[in-house]
Length: 263
Image (tube, rainbow, N blue to C red):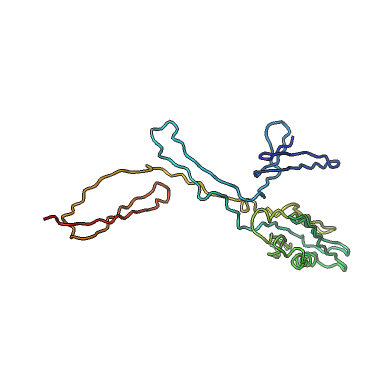
């Protein structure tokens, strides 16, 4: 069973043997696509956040209490888009491959454009040469240098002697990280995680803050003020209070007063 929540309409298409396409249309909210084998517990396959701003509202109700003294609020009315850049790491195992081995990276950008970057070993040598060549070609491919492209960074040799690098989206946020990456290698051992640049998914998801505060919404009080100690003229009377959240934010209000001796 496939299910999409928050979507207006979805269709499951059997495109080919062992290949199923789930098509979601007219979604007005972010949604998840999941699969279940028992009509109960659902395993999430994909989550779509690429729908613009996510609105946020919060409210408090008195319930069975005598007065409303606990409040829930948001830091702002919409979720903030993440400023983190999506990434995925890759490793090429160090060895001495024969001639005519190759490494290829196929990209499908978020606008549907396909870009392929590939290198072939013509004369033997070390797999590190192939890794550094494909690393350089990714960074010099003009189709990948726009805001919807990728950049290869952090090329290094790890403690095992293998060659590592990361691919980053060139723009921040979840939507830019949705570029598809399909690496392949022939007679070269390479970690080949396929899919989006969402290794750091928790950093890419939009977020907001909820604040819980407690206290009276208004406070009526009186206090004595001996005006005989004040000189004639204008003075400022300032009241200072703390609000009931965790950070104990201080606020104050100032009222001008005039003191005058009556004969």
